[in-house]
Length: 178
Image (tube, rainbow, N blue to C red; front, side, top):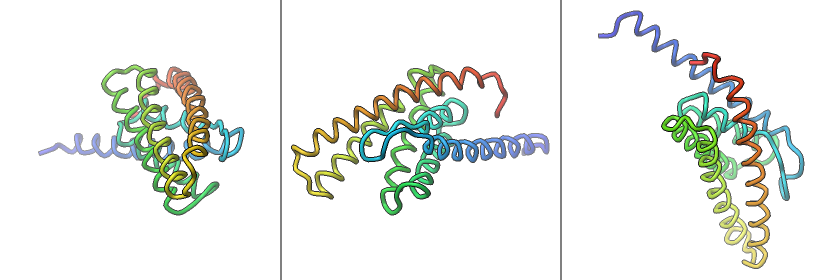
């Protein structure tokens, strides 16, 4: 049986994790709203930085949920609604979760951020290809250049996200959050 003290410690940890998840969900929405460019071409934003930073400061599942829910809420509030939001949830969840798992094992921010971003870029490219090729019935000759442009923009965003999240993590890592 758990003592009263142990129960309070467990509740305290759950409250801290829930609070951090809510905070990072909001930071992902806000970071995604701070952008340059357009949704259809190149869009540089800070949302991915917050997804990766969450992975450094929370358990993987919580980081994935904050990343996915925050990105999905951004889509609903500012961009699009419907089934696309669920795809955004899934791809951003994977980014935060993978980065969190790698960071939990390695404590290497560059490796964790890179692998989280690679997982996201692969899923985003797959989503873009399926959407444009099969849902919108675009010719392969039209899809491939668009795909290359979107992947290129995602790589730029990924590099920026890794740099920003690493800088912020190094500023915050000595603060006891959980």
